[in-house]
Image (cartoon, rainbow, N blue to C red):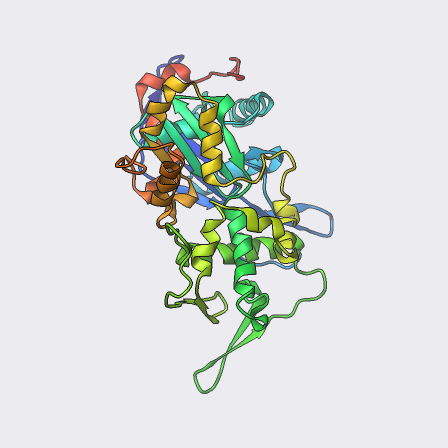
Length: 419
C-alpha cells in the first residue's frame, strides 16, 4: 500500500480505503489494485439464553434461529453499532490491520447527510483513533478509477440505481437522481420469472440450506427437503438466502439486448444450488430489462413482495419514483447547467455490480442516443474493465489515498466534518 505521511508528526502510515455498500464491504490499502477484504455487508445474529447477542460473519453458513441484519438502508448507515462492528471485523479479522493512528478514506453516497458524516467522523476518531479521515463521494471516486475528473456516473448498486453528474471532481447534488430498482429487486424478481415457467416450478430456486443430500449405495444422490422445527428459520435468513440464490442465477445467465426480447432462442442450461437442472429461456433477457422499464414491478404478485418486505430489505418510503435508467439520466441532465452537458456526455460511466451485466453498457448508450441525449460513435464507459467498474468507488479511493495532491482534503480530529 501507499505510505501516507501525517503532517502533524511526520510519521508514515499505510492509508486504508473502505467502501461499505449494501451488498458488499470492500476494505484495503491505498495504492493496491483490489481490496484485500471483500465480504457481504450483513451479519448473522444469534441470541443465547441470557439474551447475549453473538455476531456471525460467515453468513453463508446456516444456523438455526439466526437472523440476518444489515447496518445500511438505501446505502446510508442506519445501525451504527453494527456498522462499527463490521468495520472492525474487516480491519482486524480480514485485513489484519490496526486503524489506530492510521488515515482512512471512506466512500459515501452522493445523498449522504451531514448528520451521518458527523457521526461517521466521531466513530472513526473516537472509537478507532484514526489520525485522519477522508469522506469521498463514490461517484467522484468512480470517475477517478476510470481516469476522469468529470462524467455522468450511472451507479447500478444492490439498493438501487443512482445517476450523478460529476464536474471537475465534484458531484452536482441538485442533479442526482435515483430509483429503488437495483440488484436486490432483480434478485427477488427472478424467482417470480422462474416460477412462471410452469405450475410445477413454483418456488423452484431453493436455498442450499433447505436441501439435504444423501449418498446412495448405487453411487447416486438423493436430494430431499430439509425439515426444521417451526421458527428455526428466521424470516430475514430465508429472505437473504433466497435473494443470494437469485443473485447467483442472475449473474450466471442474464444479459441485456437491444431491441425486443428474443423469445425463441435455445434454452440455456443452469444447475440450481440444490443440483436441480433448470433451462433458462427469455427470463435471462426479461430480468435486466426491468432496469430500463420497471413497469412490470408495479403489478408484482406477493412472492416478490414477500422477499423484499422481510426485515432485511424493507423498501424505504423516501426513495424517488420507480423509473428506468433513460428517464433517470434525462431527469438528471435537465437539472445541469447547459454548458456542462458536453463534458458530462463525453463520458457516461456505468459502475457498480450492474456493470458486470453483459450488454448493459451498449444498451444504455443506444437508449440515450434514441432520446437524442448522445450522438452516435462515442465509446461506452472508458478507462476500466467491467470487473474493475464493479468496484470502481473502492479503486478510485485507492488512487486518491495514494496521491499527495489530495492530502490537504483529509480531516484531522477536531476539524469540521460537515463539508
